[in-house]
Length: 133
Image 1 (tube, one colour):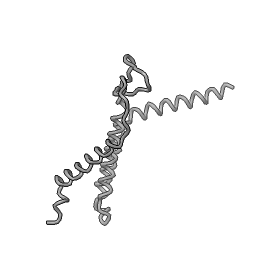
Image 2 (cartoon, helix red, strand yellow; image 1 turned 135 degrees about the horizontal axis):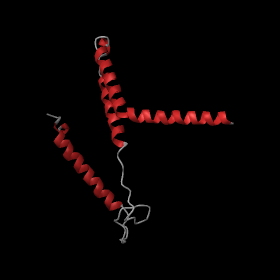
Image 3 (cartoon, one colour; image 1 turned 45 degrees about the vertical axis):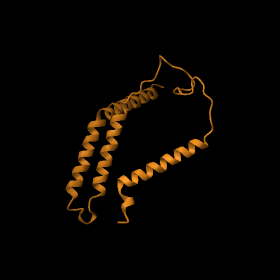
Image 4 (cartoon, one colour; image 1 turned 120 degrees about the vertical axis):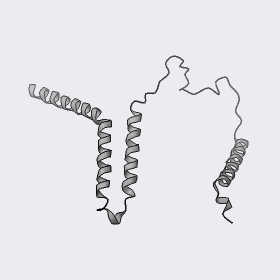
């Protein structure tokens, strides 16, 4: 009966009222500013750039986000495996590790291969240039 304050809806209302009170109190303490024409505009280093706005490119974001998702799931599965029966669950653990490695290879395999090819070409070119001297 004494745990009614721990119910999620009641906790939400209490915390919401607390945060609303803190916001109101801090608003009373804040310094008043003067209104100016560009005060509410988005700040971009003080420049208005109507034509050359940067368009973010998420080509690299999604593979990295997917990588972290896979790794977090694998770590969660491996961390919750019971320690007293690791031999019993070794097959499942190996399966998860192989599945995660395969997924990451599929995700990043082409990029790693192209980066390794560039590195190899650079090393061969630098070796050839040293041999010509």
